[in-house]
Image (cartoon, rainbow over all chains, first blue to last red; front, side, top):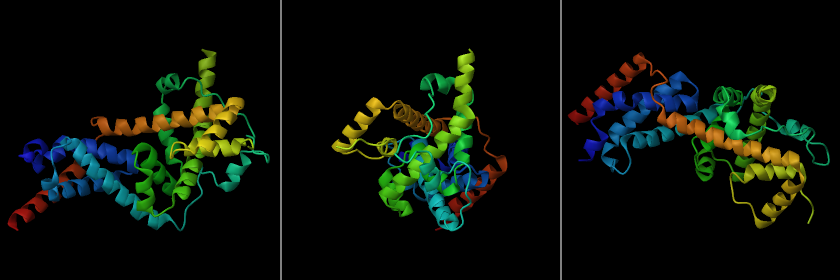
Length: 199
Length: 91
């Protein structure tokens, strides 16, 4: 009965494969990982299809499973790369954060005016530049940031899954946000605002 | 009450996306933003980034045709699923 809405497993790949793959690719930024996540998701769905209650669409149900699979992969990777992490461009360490402020706690340089967000979102390749800036974050920080901001995973869940404290999480998100802001400022916003001013 | 510095304010701006600030923190931030144009801009930037990232997630969830699902991967997964299905039927 619920099988009617979920469809037969033979059809999942054709009906939802591309959507799952795209979703996984945005999150993992890696073709092979995305493929693996899709495979794991469909296998889990096959095994757990009796648990599908029909409360959500098949697509939503599968994406729910996919999110867990991606989280598992992130958690696994987080353990692996934790030891040696290359310092990369969009990462701001404590010193760099401190350098953004003068000793009395004021900003060292003025914040740029990004103008009207709605307008800027429409303007050109914002999403591509955002993606490039996300890619420039160190892997561990990027994953955490994607989980929280893009997949909208609960803070509590992330802390539990990755075994970190909330304070820890907030600090890392803060650094990622400042790094991303700097990257956007340099690569996109400044240019876009200038272009707008030139008319 | 001491005024917040820009650095303090920037932490609170980020953290208010994660947790409900205390009354004292909210009040302090409000006062600071009232007088500080740089932090007002910073807050707008953070909120904008937050919204844009969610949009990225939403797009990933709805779009299915723009990214090619590699045919080899599709076939490989099809086989794996078929094997697993058969296996399940036999047990």
